[in-house]
Image (cartoon, rainbow, N blue to C red; front, side, top):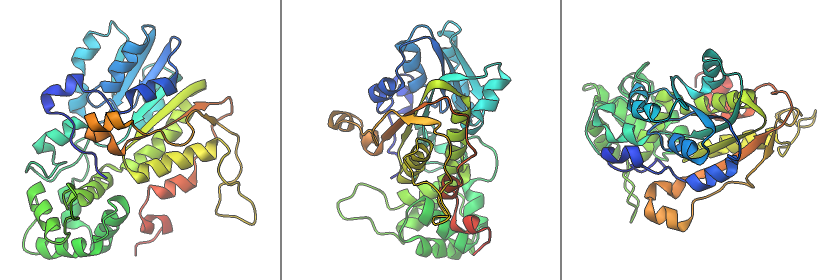
Length: 345
């Protein structure tokens, strides 16, 4: 499911991120060192990291210029312990090298769209407020409107089905093509109304019929799954032996990628052989699991914060093994079927 909206915009400075206690426990912040918050957003995890250990330094990364600008006050009150870096967390090792940091002791990733992005109608992430159909986290590259108005029917249907898990993806894609013949689809309200005319709401469900379609488009526009794959491999390269990586996801595809990455890197996944050529070949174990499976929020947390309902945490500790080559299996999970085959359908 797509993340429910967080608190109103005025509460960003003090919003509490989901699974906070579980994340901090999994990281084991018992010593001085350098932590990387790869998804700064409203700064919730960064603030918690700074508060948890007085000798800890933090480098926080975000591709959204507005998030970096909004973090200025936190930098000023951190007594030199926090640096904000503009960029994608999939490039975290290169970004840290650029500021003179070769390795890190901890990395935390909170995957998906941020509260600031959802709450600002002009960003075009949410159908709850009408705005331009944008959805770009970094403000660069093709927008959701470009994708909706220019992609072919098969590509649109694949995005909605594989990234949004929308069962009526083909029907929605056909409706988009029929509508855009009469004029461009430019706003979130236009698209939400179009999807709602095709997808019936589930009885008793509070989820808007356009939720899955918006999720799929947002993931495609920002290459969120590809960024997650790159971020996991970048964290693997960046972490010191004994360093820990914690990842919070909100979507089944995200969690599947993290699960398979940790399984493969810890030796839990099936090993390749001539009888199973599609399975990754054996590699040195670069991680050992910290969490046994996924960690879910408590009932008390979900009652107090509905956003936490779909959250899942997985964490692992870096071993002394050199980083193996990237995993092609999880790279495939981040791609549409046509891209996996190398041809357009």
